[in-house]
Image 1 (spheres, rainbow, N blue to C red):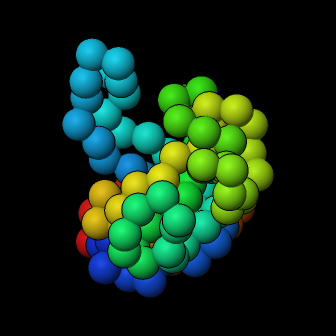
Image 2: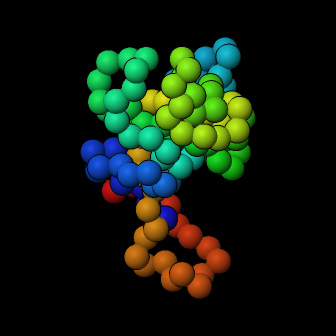
Length: 110
């Protein structure tokens, strides 16, 4: 797999990596998930918001279930949803050099 620049247009179901600053409440600096919402939200200005359903080891590190301030943007389990600005996200794509029948994958940054 390879990581593409956050400048690429994100779409729902894209696999992504989220980088965030660790704090005393949040020690996990890199999260993984699937895009579930792209665009404007009612709780903040701008149209560059991305709602992510967390996956793998990131499950449980979210802030919501896809609903914020009574507005449902997507559905996921409690504390598995997260909204971030698009510039905090990198899309993960399958590298064309990796065979679909291969059990291993490589990760690189483009």
